[in-house]
Length: 267
Image 1 (cartoon, rainbow, N blue to C red):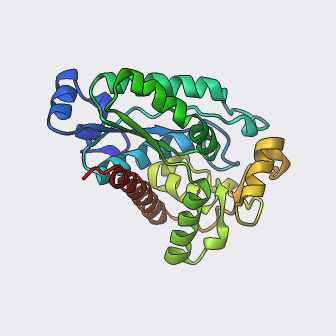
Image 2: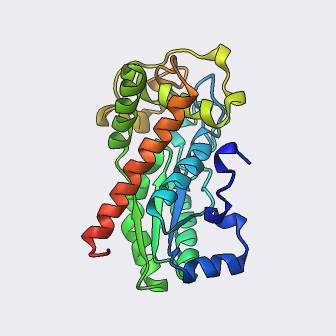
């Protein structure tokens, strides 16, 4: 088990027994967080499972902030077609990802969960989840009319928080590019320091991530933009910065979900 998860078993759904889950729901743990990650290239210095591992760490923090939530098993493979130009990447079709999410959500709704929160930890999952959200809500409504499905889908907003935190902490906000950069590299240095290839760290495509660049990456593939698979610059990475980034982005996501609850009239 990662050190980041020690002592948190009561929030991790798959570590509980069925009577413990049933009791947790009865006692008000009626929300569940589903991280949606990826297994894809992250430059020459990071392992393929970056987004899957980040997803679990991020989702756990979001669950803690919400206060009434358990953490569902991370969906480790996502939609990564634009990374298929790099060896090792595994990609689900968008319709496959939607089918998996539908089955996840329907299963959890049948057990009595009232709020299901989707948290993408891979940039390529944000827009597909936004597109399928209304269909997922309709599917869940057929199972339980009291269960709601929400998702955080603001990719550029997420990256902007990365940039702000990195600038505030170490003055290197310019190194945030959105993929295998100082932010993701710092998070992996915090979560799995032994798997960061420090001798292979190199700068990638410079400049901020914007909607035009995202669209080009999805249309032509990431390798058409960055030959080494990096957007930004990983240099200056730091484990303490990685922990701070996970904490800050989890707070961002949890606050967005709380705002949605308030908009729906929930206390």
